[in-house]
Length: 273
Length: 279
Ligand code: SF4
Ligand code: SF4
Ligand SMILES: [Fe+2]
Image (cartoon, each protein chain N blue to C red):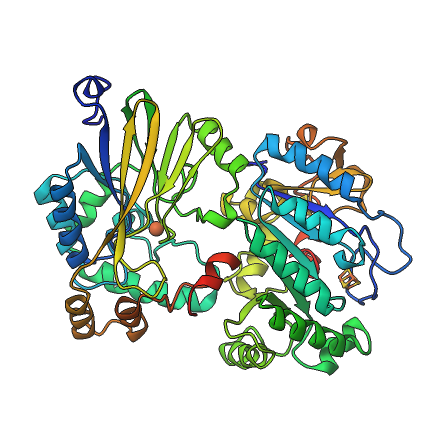
């Protein structure tokens, strides 16, 4: 099922896994991320779903992932696109959030070729890795729901420990919210939200983030790596495609302008809007 | 029951400083049907909840800030997880707001304050909640804004067309005028269903709500599938049914983590009256 067998730990003192969260059709950021991963070196690279949304030309991301042979899992976007659903099932409840979510979904669906939609349907919804005797579970929203939001300020330790327990995992990896974090739970379990490379982390900076997970001798470390990329080029292409100016503003300023109501108070307070 | 994600506390019992006409558990200054919870009561429950992996904690009443222990209770809760308080907004004095801000800053978890309004002007609001309430709530808003706390303001859809886009926009402006630059508005459908569905759709669901026909999504929005309610009398199936003795499921939280046999028959209350201080 995966490339990492327990034996790989015999060969290398540590195992490094690069994790790419939501890509949101940000091809420029994906290229920059992959070259950073190549530069740093990783034993494996996985994507965590939501290849499309926000950005332009959604066919380019799957093309590149397939060309490079990078494995990964479905996000709510792939699940929706593959099944011909009429919306992204992002899990928003606010009407304004849903208006913008629908705009990106309709654009993405219209511009994704059928072959890629079918390929998305063949992706697993979760992946289990066995790394150095650590059971790593890759999921999109959470192990129990593809569109569950795991925010740091609303995911208390006892709850995360329950998820690890119920899903037989020592390390749970997720994305979907757009904000990265890592919690080491008291009992040796870890939950890592790998963040996203599709849009900035609502911090007023234009870079995006991916995650390098290092597992060695019972130790789990998550390094969040900022990636600068040609965001001006992305913004230009988004304008050419007439994508909403609000999305472009986020790419150019690093502040989220849409899908804000899903944010818990703590995360919301840190942003500009 | 799907999973115990949310634990509710009837922290002020059925004691409230006002008497809204639509309050389906008839809270009032004198209703002692459920008593206030003490800090110790809450701490005991938090210890149980920790073992069960609860995700978040909701506080309601009555009016939570009628409880003298409310701030220490929040402090204890925020050490363990995120907390949401449902309030009528009348007791948000300056010092209370400053303390809420301090508790929120000190915790790694989110503290959310939800203030319910029944309209976006004095007349419609006070017709339901009582004369003078609107003005007190406005002072509460100002104090929250001064303390840098950004509440969710919940309004029922019935109130003067807040369900429409123009209604929303108008109301968001009003919230901004209170001093909140990131207004958070939650419009509650009168018939409680998945938040963005329309009332027509709600009616269809309502009709389907006769036991077997429920879809999984419908069942998921019912509070009993992911939450339990702690009151001074024990642990209840949900925040809606605390006046039904059959809805008390046990003394400990753990023993209530089983399906609730009356659930679908009792949905009437849930869907029709579920709005107000419990959503
Ligand atoms: S609806 Fe809420 S504010 Fe009104 S009387 Fe009942 S508990 Fe009090
Ligand atoms: S009123 Fe009935 S259906 Fe609604 S949450 Fe309570 S038990 Fe469940
Ligand atoms: Fe997602």
